[in-house]
Structures are given as structure tokens and as C-alpha cells.
Length: 210
Image (cartoon, rainbow, N blue to C red):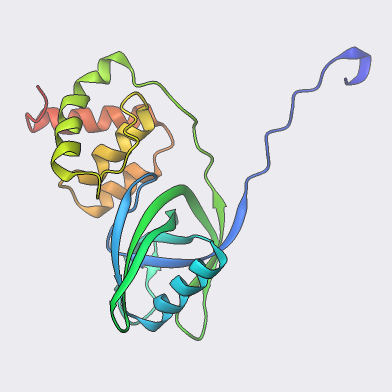
């Protein structure tokens, strides 16, 4: 209780910060999604081995400038934590990994080591929590269900949360035939309902919804 018996408003929780290695790619990983990766550069083989040993995630970011291989690429500021769901090394020096998307993050500081691996201090972007899919957006579901059936659980993992506005938005965005920069902008959106509205307009314009 505060002065004169007035209760104080609880302070919002402090943002969670982490130190993680970054893996800039020419693709966008969304929370809850699966992304197959073929890893062969030594810096990323070492990174993956260290993450597996420590049970810690790395960060996947869309490349803003540069290339995936060789020199250090410049990543977009918002990315997604990647947990290693499975891995195998069928050929020496080539690691096949399936990464599962976790929470989004924002890069605060970053630097490259002598191994050309980017490491960053990141701030976790808090989840919105379960948000019911609005009735007016239910018309997105038949298309999404068809895609989930066609793609299969290898790329569209269960549980399928068709009643969750954020989950529906992420799943539709990741399979859209649009440029990665457009997907990045949708990843960065804070409002799941605004994301759904944009997606519905896009699909309506292309007559992909019933």
C-alpha cells in the first residue's frame, strides 16, 4: 500500500536481455515456425555446437546488407530466437539443422569476433499472450488449413492454434509468396490484429480467399 492507503500501480516487468550469437540469413524465421538449415561454415558449425552443448538459442535475422557466406553481414534489428529442434551430420563438415522459432528480439548492441561470428546483446520482445481470432478474420482459416495439410507437420508443426490471432498471422505470413522485406515488416509489427488485416487485404486482392 502507498501513502494514505492508496495502492500503487505495479511497475511493468523489466525487459529481458540476453547475449546470443546471430545467424544472418536471406530468410525470415517466425515464432513457432520450423526452418531447415544447411550449415557448413566453420563459424556456424562452432556456434551450433556451442548452443547444443549449453542448451541455448541463437538468433536468426534477415540480412539487410551483405551475403550469407563469407564476410560479416548486416542484419535487420528485429529477429527471432532459434532453438535447435533436431540435427544430423550425414556428411563430415555439413550439419543439417531444423531450427524452431521462439520469441522475437531487438538488437541493442552487436560486434563481430575474429571468427566473423556476430554476437549481440538483445532485448526480448514480450509476447502478446493468447489473443482470440476475431470473427471477421475467420475467413482466413480455410486457406490456412489447406496449406497446413499440403505442407505437412515437417514444416507446419503442431499444435495448430487456429483460434490464436498471432499464430494464424505468423503461419500465413511465412508461406506468402512475397519478398523477404515484406515478411520482415510483418514480423516487426506489434499488433497481431493489424497483421491479420494486412494479410486479409493482400489475399483478397489476389482472390485467394473464398
